[in-house]
Image (cartoon, rainbow, N blue to C red; front, side, top):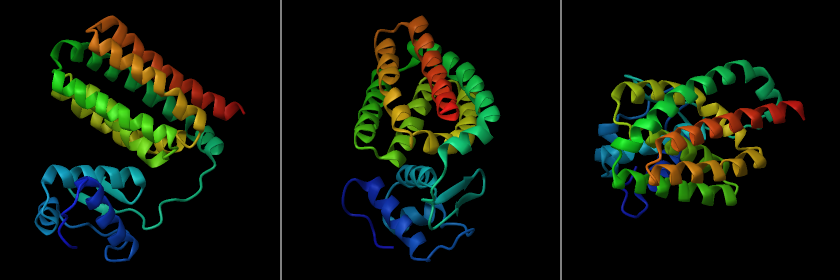
Length: 231
């Protein structure tokens, strides 16, 4: 692969790796080059490669295995899925995941009100701006990735390493839900107002309101799922 020279760097890296997978340079099931090897090959930072891997995982091309690296999941990930049937089958475990997310994210955002920096808040705002643009453009893959980033950053803002580690495990298991859920236009639109409420409560340093806003957001996600199943 040729070195990356133009911005945005992460998008370039994503496209280069994705094209290599599609063209068969990296076959399904095989391990991708290490972060260090890609850094040297593409002349980018390790953080850029890691972000590219996360995007590719959300897109369905790559599977990240803790302690082992990135593996090719599929060269043709865009398979049609019956959203209603998928939710019906997975509803019980999704309810469990949302309950756990409520516990983790409610605690994290309460702590984040006190511990987060202005720089972190601005990063969260920027991610949400891109998320809203993706919603209006109906870009499902981008929505899924940016929504995951939005919630991840909130937990990171708590600066509680145990919460961050637990959230990483839960988020990993929740990826498929996001990519399926945002295929329903209403679900994507329903995430905009709660995100803005969360941002405003953080900006105002209102811990009770922030905690309530994240709980309401996750409750709405559960209701959206139930609506799809009942249609």
